[in-house]
Length: 288
View 1 (tube, rainbow, N blue to C red):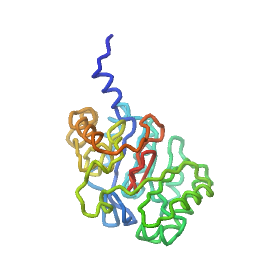
View 2 (view 1 turned 180 degrees about the vertical axis):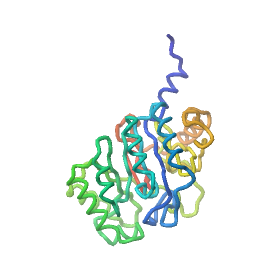
View 3 (view 1 turned 120 degrees about the vertical axis):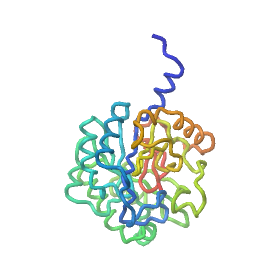
View 4 (view 1 turned 90 degrees about the horizontal axis):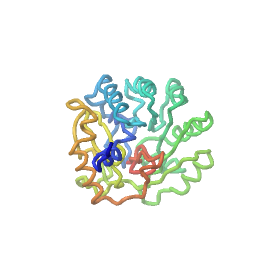
């Protein structure tokens, strides 16, 4: 059977990684949060059944990994149920948490086979870290990073450099001393509260959005990544996920981003390429 160029391209662009952007609710009000999550946020219009359907469709379509993100995904009432369902489908699951308040039940989830953990850390200096998160969170986040390492939980940490003398190098050394082996550093991306009131511009993205990855938001909207949510290409409450991911709107959005965004050199074939949206993160780190 002859394989056409179109089939090769379609296979290359099937997302291997899908963000489930569960909620805008978060205990923190980070000054650089790319989606403006906070204590006043909500869980959107997606039901547990909607999210379960997305997982089912994603697994059939060829997605291999998901990341639960937000906001703070552990605050979503269906989050544990979704982790369980994803694992049952054979998907790898990463949970991007601020690690401020973690229950015993969530620690058990983090230790499950097939589950990994990610978080953000801003400075070894408590005052500097707390200014960025809007709450006195440094001690709890750092203690929970230590706890994860001690328990043998797979954890990676994103450091988002907001400038203004932030102790990024010191934060990295602190994490290394704790025992964290996977550390990513990225600049704050100009979206949400970090935008300074400017309209979103795809030039501020890492350039890999939509290339092997996609995001589903709390309202069901699909975008090339968690930072390009204004570039909606469909909604899973109206369409099947595979139809959206393989549709013309996604292809056009991905091409538009690639044409103007500065590529960070993150490798889409790297096993750790989830893309770090500032507030949660990864290899191409556009973390808040």
